[in-house]
Amino acid sequence: MPSSLFSAQQVPALLVLEDGRSFRGISFGATGEAFGEAVFSTGMSGYQETLTDPSYHRQVVVATAPHIGNTGWNDEDDESSRIWVAGYVVRDLSRVRSNWRSNRSLDAELRNQGVVGIAEVDTRALTRHLRERGAMRVGISTVELDPERLLGRVLEAPQMAGANLVADVTVAEPQVTPAVGERRFTVAAIDLGIKDMTPTRMSERGIEVHLLPASVGIDTVRDLAPDGVFFSNGPGDPAAADDAVALLRQVLDAGLPYFGICFGNQIFGRALGFGTYKLKYGHRGINQPVKDLTTNKVEITAHNHGFAVDAPLDAGTPTRWGEARVSHVCLNDQVVEGLELRGTDGELRGFSVQYHPEAAAGPHDAGYLFDRFTEMMAARRDHARAGGEDA
Image (cartoon, rainbow, N blue to C red; front, side, top):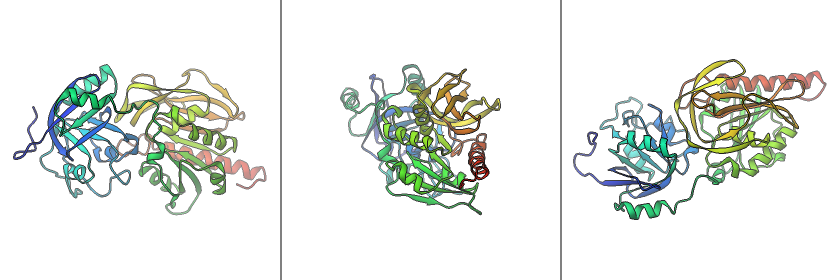
């Protein structure tokens, strides 16, 4: 068993999966109970960004890296206003925080926000179990230490399949991130659970980002006269997000350039007529290899998704807006990692990726996708001016 962080008072904790397998450990963060879907993340760094990613809403994250907490917690790296994970599972919680940017410990921040954690768990065995059996419901408790009784509570928890969680994570009111330097473009960003780094990456490229609640209609989008529309990442089952699909189809009908990330890729797939499905255990981490089929380059990318688009890898699909085609694939398992839509003139009208080019945390291999978005908006503006229309 890993060396303990707690030399004085050790509070026992219990983890039980829905198939009955259990693990005992030591509590950290808040005491109490947490229920959700057990998933594992393979990132060796960036736990603060992971825990504050709204896409992890209602999930209990298992860290595969054995040593967690050494960089503590700071006030700059949050990807939203709060921690979204339902619970956190680690093997060895660091006894000290040793980063100069740290303001407090991971343990203290989870405790402050009421998030239950369990340490001194054999996370290698737990991860192998989830890889073999698939993501499943789980419970963590410091108050119920009988596995059979806690299992009964786990089986009462809702499934992730069929869950529409967008309303839980979207902004209540519109927000604006101004462009850095000269404003070149205006983008309407639909918040399905966005990470803060995404509008930051856009603003660095001269984009003024108007972050809108997921409940807005097409008239609100049109009133902004945007150069493009963006749909963000987010939690839940894309098959349940019918309102977002309907809005995106109206965006495409309006001829507005489109860019989507993660959940925004799944919504794009549905809007184009493809189905979605739940992956066995998903892709979560910052080391996933993806091939861009338009350039044949391989990128190491950051992922967080449990659902994927079901689209043919080797053929285009006609839609009423043009031809849709898979643009990126995961080299580990050939899962669709991106889509693009081209009009009858061959011009790019919209594209999306299943992973996270904003890289918070993660590698910067895919940062060019934000440039691709600006190029697409610039091409549309040039085309409109050439035709004598307002840009």
